[in-house]
Image 1: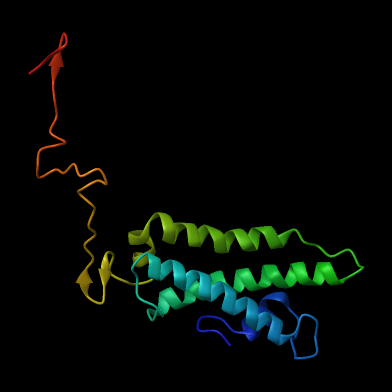
Image 2 (image 1 turned 45 degrees about the vertical axis):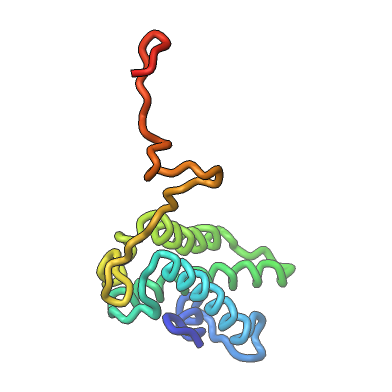
Amino acid sequence: MGTYATNADIAKRIGRSLTASTKPSTTDVDAWISEAEGEIEAELIAAELTVPVTDSRGVLLLKSKVTSYATARWIEAIAAASNLAVDRTDAPDLMREFTDFRDVVRGNPSRAATMLGQAPGTVGGATAVRGYQTDNSDGASIAAGDFDPTFTKKGKNW
């Protein structure tokens, strides 16, 4: 059972009951839920956001995205295991719902933070400060003036 979604949420979305003996089983669905939640939480951590998400709207949003992922995996598993023509048309759209949100977290962490009810740019209540290396590997440094601009006009240094 996941943090944001359960196999009961998937069963509700697909309109079928899931048990330990169905194919795919509740164990399979729980594994897909864990995959989705693991990927989303890893992206949230990389974006320096707090996990698990506790804001009620954020939890509902993640439930929707995780459910989309697991439902897409369920559709593909049914199609792969069945000799019957299974309608797979929803699976790519469902997976896209998940990957589009993952891409929002990657590309715009501040927006993702707002969507999840968190303050943008904060980790544990402190503003995140990122540093950049100022010296390069050949020993040149900003402090020594090695990167000061040089202006030339007609071959002369100014």
